[in-house]
Image (cartoon, rainbow, N blue to C red):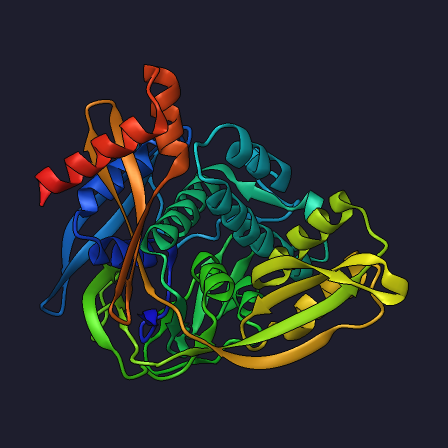
Length: 404
């Protein structure tokens, strides 16, 4: 199984995670150019070689209108008691930016909104204000939005089967925020890390920021020691401050050696729902954590035609998916069964044709190799150039052969 493991021995911040993920890619600068083409207003992302305690890695920098803000030193997230020298941004403003000003794959956009929504909810609980009234400081928010967007984009590009992480070192002592001096972890960070194993230590300062905590809580499925794995790539994302211990987040990508992964299969019978209602219910199952959802035609009581709705999810997500299935369908019962799933390893990439890039997905393992061209890329070129899909597909295959 393709596994991404995040070593958070020095905590986690958005910039550190982005630097580590970029370090896993064969061409970090190409990925950086893609990130800068997303269209985040006033934001420029940069990648610099950096060194901590003799270890080489990357420092991911975000410039907002030419200005850089240190995520570890400033509280980006303010409630209604804000100063009047800067414009402040609401959750609705963030949603508008992501949906209407940025060019993102839909799945990446949804992850970005989910992570920022979690930050807003944490701030809401801390300050006792409705989420709609939570305000974000302009420069800090754009910095955090850039970190979150880049991390979500890179995780989708790497497309691991599983994301795991070590327990999170949060630091110790206090941190100075807009509201005054607060204990480490800062209250919003502590809210975001509910259910995540954390620890303090001799290092004084804030090691885990709200942005880092929100990204870990959203993407990481397992927290624990490094599993047995064959590593393909290692990336180091450097923090801005210097400590006696190397201030970096280490990302390791490889195969964890498992013969199969465990999934939970859920199913229910449906004979009184419209096709539109079933499609909506399947969307909600994915939102609840399903990794796969599908229907199978079946004959129900009294010979009536119906459907069996199936969903697969990871261990730990059963209750959320079952709850969504009960809530959004007409069923009164859900069946649940643990099973082993055997999957091929997956890899994504692009090839350059005379008319533009065409993406592909490659699956391999178990003595099998498969490849599928991205239909949207093929179709876009075919429409624009007046070609058939087969002609574009053949051009992509020729380009791939010539590039080997």
